[in-house]
Amino acid sequence: MNSKERVLCAINLGVPDRVPMDFSANQGTLDRLYRDLNVSSYMGLLKYLHIDIFDLRGVIDPIYKGPVPKETYLTNGVKQNFWGMRTRIMETPTGPEECYCDFVLKDITEAREMDKHLWPSADWFDFSDIENRLKLWKEFCIMITGVSMFQHASFLRGLENLLMDMICNKELAHYLMDKFTNFYIEYFDRLITYAKGNIDILRIADDIGMQNKQLVGTNTFNEFFSPRIKKIVDMAHSHNVKIMYHSCGSIIPFIEKLIDLGVDILDPIQVRAKDMNPKDIKDNFGSSICLHGSIDTQYILPKGSVKDIEEEVKKMIDILGKNGGFIISPSHVLQTDVSTANVEALYSTAYKYGIYEV
Image (cartoon, rainbow, N blue to C red):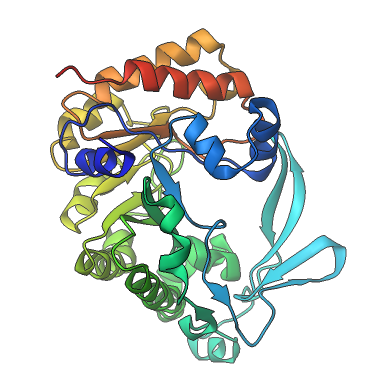
């Protein structure tokens, strides 16, 4: 099997030749891996690690042609993008990270006030050369990412404000989440169309879980998330594109609902969050949805030895990879606290141990 065939087999809950692998890392980690592994390109790094999925975001993007700069640098190191989201590079325990700040819609009190904000349009992007630029990547399973109706809304409104809106100011919350949902449906519908059959996966990322419980209740999920997820799923499936849904944390109460909404892949299986026992997840949901992730980035990858990582990878393959339907990857973007040796241990072990017996 090639990478595309291998991943699609797993998504369809089949048994491929080996467990497919995925990869994501922040820029500081990427720079170190290029140096330590003596590779000169992103494609070279993916091939070195035997990765099967290529996420085109940040590598092959539509050409921006909007009426405002794609990025603007303000004072005090603050950067603003075309949405109005503001970020600043901050020092964290895992190294420098781009963090969201200065939420420009935080003081809005009524939905109609948001009409004054400059909302982007899919017309601000030129998708016409996407198919041609993807030609070099056809051996990979190609994924597009960036859909968010909740988390991105919080980057303009502020997370606490948005959560309060869902209870006390529902009209505003619906307005804001619709702005993002409708934009991303149009944007990715065009991107997929221009890619002409070369896109395999569309990834939604909206964290609705915390370490020990859910971030929102079931009623809130049903009102604010379900209908919007369904619209995105229906758009992707109309193109024969699979849907991956990403949420960190403890999300057991939502998994059955995500399956009912048509989600094909559940990411990232944060196995050290409350109730996210991998065997239970495989037993209860593995016959209905492909499982993606599972290699812990909180403790094992940054703090474990090479042997610890090898044992963890084998354990997850034995549990989640049983009878197929599993794609292995870290449970979060690899940060600078994960050593090169530990990255290599993850992927070399999965590559050798993840072979299915014929």
